[in-house]
Image (tube, rainbow, N blue to C red; front, side, top):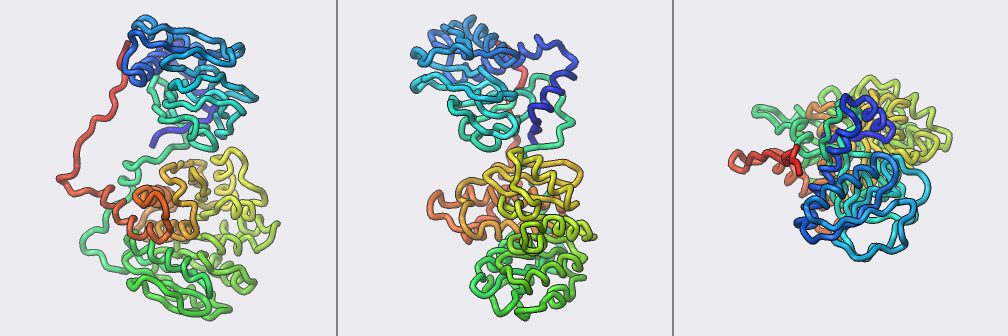
Length: 473
């Protein structure tokens, strides 16, 4: 995982550094200058404008400009607080105006179509939330130091940051409690089904669907099957629901179905409850009984999130109390509206802290959905998944996600690892799909392709040394 630290955490890391500030600034400037050379394709005869503010961020830019000038570039430094409204033509603008601690407003100058290299974060982007001020230069590349900052991953940050390169300048970020998930992390947590297993080794029960909402049940059950569940048992209140042919289906009574839902759970590896169940009073009571009584790992999604909050605006205390009493691992998968019902208020602008707050309150793993997804554990550790895109903003994709997580939990992954890997697999599968006209059911056939990437045949494995650090100008 790539470490992620807040501006406050980064300030503490800077203060605890064992080397002088000047040394760290030199390293940062070197990383910026190298990125500028790559972006421009050289230095001789190139024109570079540096927008430099006060403090270390501005000094990083000034020293990078000096390095480029020594290599033959024509460099002009503009003070961020007194920048002209329009800059003259150039090959590159280095934005070192304001760093991750920026608050307030800043209107960037008109730079026409000049390429932009941002230092640490584009000026005007809040380093904690990604909120943007009125004028922000959209960077082609952002060079950030030691670790990613939340503002590069949330809100308007990704749209303005361009490609983000993390430069190692010798700061210790090993104590970070938050990380951006990479494919290597998912490959480490997930392992293919071993030889000799049987279908009950990773069985999933999906409690989902209702008259008129059969699609949600189909998607959740199909995703669990495609993610490697040896057996998927779908129970739907009130009648038969269509499902993939490999899924075992059974109808439950429309009312008082909680005892049926909990029958024979001793052979089940996990339960997924909620997609398309409905929100009538009898369903709310049944869901609450299953959540409280089923001694098996569980993913609570969709209408079940509404049910455990008691279906009311003030039900957040009830939800926390109900989930805290569970003896087995539990994952909650709210979007912003469901989070509001569970916690009593919308997620705060700091989405990492919002997910942590609900995880602590409910003593479970919380997956807070969004363009950038946050997964938080009760320990305070958090993980970020940013590989999804707008293709997932369509009905039914959340049902697929719950099925993926349920199957991963049934295979033996911890709730934290299963939720994290599930979010990443979900996003990566969407990335393999059609760019336009994408629907949730398309994910079902794409999930196995993600696993093929995670576990390629031996002759497809190629070693890679990655990017080299420490180059000097």
